[in-house]
Image 1 (cartoon, rainbow over the protein chains, first blue to last red):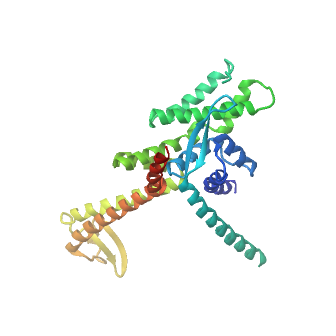
Image 2 (cartoon, rainbow over the protein chains, first blue to last red):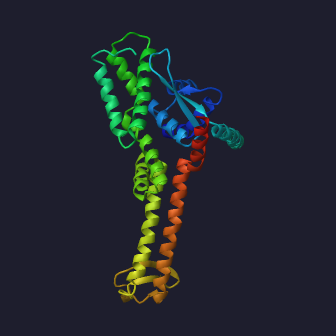
Image 3 (cartoon, chains in turn brown, blue):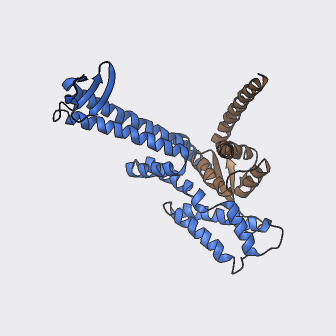
Length: 111
Length: 214
């Protein structure tokens, strides 16, 4: 069961990251904290960074270094134009997918 | 930047050195950027710990939450190698990246096994096709009555009277052609899989857009 949860989480982590970047640029630690707050990360924090790197290579997000009052510069990520288009499609798909799945679960519980 | 205590600093350096080692295949700029980002994560996480405990203890907790570089950092390298391989059309690099992927995720592992099996099948078909004229009785497409018995080389199969070979010397071109066909189909599939993983077309397009933006 725990394994299933961590698999499911990993699969949806990318979408989670993109959603968090939809309206605001954010840096790695901030993304991790927001994901943790929304119900546990279930993976070690470091996993986020290769994922961000991959999304960047895929052209979905871009990055920039910004000096901060915390003393060390932060690497901020933001959605690219292409990422914005993609996330609209992905959220649409996700809504349909979760609706179908919830329906299936409800029907199975009725019997 | 706040300096760490002389006791905590070696611990941090050791962690970052381990990370650097794993990132070695990357370009130095890329590697250093990742190290800087992770270092920032660690130092900022430290400032977020409220209780003034021992700095070494705090750092250990932060590093534990972040995870061992061996658990997450190979992910950086795999994508880098695959992308470079596709860009430079280097079979060696693609192969290396693909193997790394196989060792790092379940999807990758299944894909690597699958592609390995397909390539093995294609090479075996070509080889037994070529060998058929040398062992005409032992190599071929064998049936026992109406059911399939075997394909390829079966030692001393001609001594079993119920088993018959169906194709004769037509086996030579058929095995070689199907072997070559499977080779090309597998290679195409492999290219598609890697492209899908990298989302390369989008990537290239976006690079250009990013450059246009400055």
